[in-house]
Length: 337
Image (cartoon, rainbow, N blue to C red; front, side, top):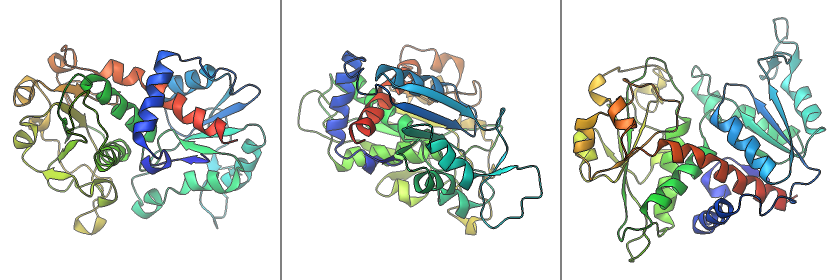
């Protein structure tokens, strides 16, 4: 595997989930695979879980790691071509990338959406520049439009908590309010991975023949995610109706994706409606659903204390599984070197 950006890069999800089970049972089973190999993790944005889990995954595989915080000690980098660099950016990414590639064997990229130019963000410009000019395998640690390591961990977490059941789960992705405009990367990937798991008819239940996922997305009007990620999902604007019978609730805020209205509202906050905050009443509409969130979470905005602290909240094991998803991805990349 030379690139990891979308769910199809991983191929057969049943096989990938089996690898995740294997890795979780013995995190150091492949601890010689990365001997004398170096992972460079490039962060254009802040991170906690992604940084820790990916570095731990590399260590599990015996790799050396280098962490570069672009905005904390490195030269400011220009990312656009054809510009006159007469401002505060001292180095162009097109020179920086091959230099970075000369010091490592694998590169992880974390670069958020700017939320001002939809075409630029959705072209995944920064990620593809690393693919083109580094000469090394590249994987996404959250980019402008996707967060595949998170989505893989989410799917694995659902499979762990559903393995004793005999039917397909109902999984609901719900928008929730937030004081800041956030990218669509996490909801985009979550939708993409849930739908691909359903398409591949992954047997998440431990018994029975009812495979796949019943996947629903709910949000206020104007927050429609790009069909590139949600085609095939049930879109429900009535949050209560969406929650009815749900087995998993995945709460997440995202700014306007710019799909409707000619794209003029891309990256904007269209609503701060607190009635969408997931509280105990919302969870009472479900089938005793487990609560999920990628973290960090704004308590009192996205979710109330009693819900995120309830026994049905699985945000901590979900976060811990980021180590597992990263280990599987890095293992496959190393095996392809």
